[in-house]
Length: 260
Image (cartoon, rainbow, N blue to C red; front, top):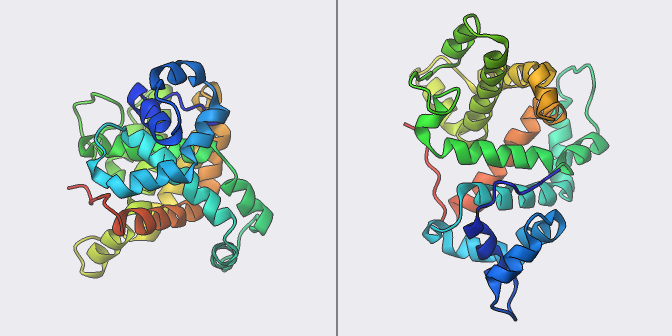
């Protein structure tokens, strides 16, 4: 369940200032609604707040990346849930290969109805806005891992808890690149600047999110269902991230560039 715990005080004030138009006691309202996920969710999902963010774009320096991605991800999940063309095209694509458990419209709708998955994704995208963090398995780690194979090798020398964080990081890393920079991956592969294509990232992402979902730490942190959903629906989520990037970043004032 979406809990909005990562929204900053500035995020909450921004929401209130742009949602409540007939009052100006914003801090008092913030104290009243803090922790009320239904009211905050209604504000985050409002057209008024969305239009303000789209209009201001990168000029909005007083809201957090987590807030930005939470707003955009919740919106794209809801829009695509009602987009019959998106669902039909996605079903054709997913079921064009043999699968043990074929997808259907209800299964896709269940994924698109999740609040836990977009919340997890918002955290990942916000975290990876710091380019250096993309190559660190845990916070404040001195060693950097630029390639998935290096992360996999690190598993062999890690205790059980660190293995969980490596599994998650490999999944996050693969999802981030596949979802936000697929053309960048394919360009490098096409012109032989890299031997790695999109399928490579998808396969590793699905595998390691699956391993993470089965780990005891996932159950302790109540992430097992979320991580499993991302593993199973990896291709759908990458399509959602493509839509988010193309619909909200490319044609508006928000910029998102490939990491160095």
